Amino acid sequence: MAEITSQQKDFITQRAQGCCEYCWSQLKFSPDPFSIEHIIPLSKGGTYDLANLALSCQGCNNRKYNHLEAYDPIDGKLAVLYHPRQQSRSEHFVWSDDFTEMMGISPSGRATIIRLQLNREGVVNLRRVLTASDLHPPT
Image 1 (cartoon, rainbow, N blue to C red):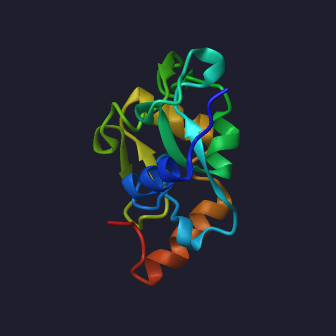
Image 2: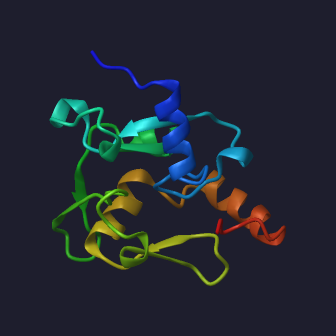
């Protein structure tokens, strides 16, 4: 079984600019550790290739688990979850006017928000505090 090296972890963290690649929480302000997540889970044929690895907070990682899709709350159809290596964040998500909530603007974005609970209470509260301090959203 392959392992992720410390050099790979450093590269992935830098590539993600120290942010969860799903909810955009910042590692430096998180009370919980971040992990390297398999975008396509190993159990679904994913690999240890850098193109399949993402920086993820524990909340997003735990909620994503081995899921690749979820239901879009608008049309009720299954949609593929957001893939941070293959999709552009701006095509799937926008911030609310006060920058505390992520809003899905595509089936994939909406399904990802629901599956990973990207607007869970603790994350929204942290965004609120960081926005007031001009530290959110990350650039």
